[in-house]
Image 1 (cartoon, chains in turn green, blue):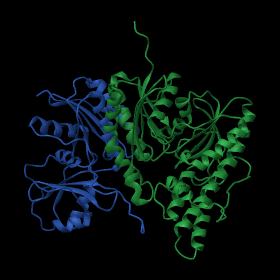
Image 2 (image 1 turned 120 degrees about the vertical axis):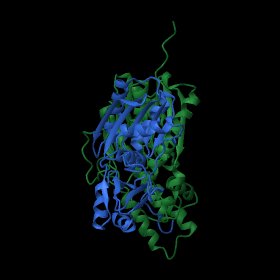
Image 3 (image 1 turned 90 degrees about the horizontal axis):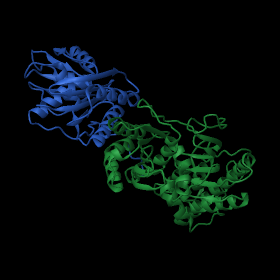
Length: 357
Length: 222
């Protein structure tokens, strides 16, 4: 008699501009992890074009899944379930991943799970670090900026969210204003290295305000006005100084909001916990140092999953599916992809927030 | 001949699936709907496989459009998943060919298939006498103008934009008769695909034929 092997699930991610497929097992091993970034094809447009993204997902997804199976040396029949991001995100892309997953599942008679993309990010520290519940999560990416208390699988309390742009979106838009390339995050961080953050006085939106919500669009406007006030087109030093000022402003705002969130977390959970950061913006060094300080102040460990697991990937979808599948959950073949899908539907709507929040 | 095909269409205003075996459809499902293809298609396909038996597939075939960009991708992505899990190829069949087959026009009769593009222009392809050619896009008025004085014999019309095209032709005094209209049907697609494969022909891989670039422009100064 053989010992029962751990669960194995294929996870598919197509909700933004990364096409990804991964196979993860219940012992937290990533057996295959394939990611194809579409960044290059969106560069000429200065941002993601949904129809172009959806076309690219369809062009590449089946090949990526085959590659993942080959990397893990597994067949579909060796898997226990098939999972795909079911939302939120760019719906044309989400549909491609969901339909491919449904096609595999219905043919192989395997369970299908539609995973909330945000839940994928939220549970990643349990895949990377085996972290116990509860913990405080800052999710900062091109599409999302949220502070969540993660109390269990499917149990999330949103403490704050952005009322306008996501942090990553603010980086992209600011980079564009400064004539820096897309994606803006790495470009601004690079430019900021040679910059003086004190030369331009930029606002710190929401700083000191009650609650844990974010706002970044005013910051972007301030950058635009400061660029317009220059005597000519921004010189390299102007760009560096502006990038440094912008990055410092974002880091200060993120730190302020996280400090408040950590205090709220402590009210709910007097002991234990951790401050976790996920999402592509977590790669930014200035923001990361600010978060490390906040975590130390609050007496919580700071946990940052490896960069590859922080940005969009299939492993986090497979892992979230493993967590849900263990609790007996799965979804029907009639699951309808969801462009909007809040993790905490009971959270009060952020004041002034648009439909994306 | 013994071919077993799973055939899927969701390129237009319907979702449908057919299991084709030994020259006939043995299980079919169809739902006429303009929305929710991503929700409705997979259960139809699962039912067809349950009823018709899922073993021994030779290929999965999906319509490649043109049609609704999203609808096309829903069917093609599902076909890719089925192909992955069953180890058979995912093949494509042109939506024009499926609508043309539904028209059952006489051999050589001029036939024009019109597919809704959700814009002013229609997606069009001609077949038969004097019209055979590659797919293209044109407004109903432009194509009616081009066909003025084409022939005495009425042109057969098919496709989910058949009525729109027929109205434009009629207004321009071009004789036309609608032979089929409405969304495509996987059962018809299955018959077309099986006929081609049985005759030793090949079908292309299941990749989309959008016939229109994404609506986007490169920003000035980028």
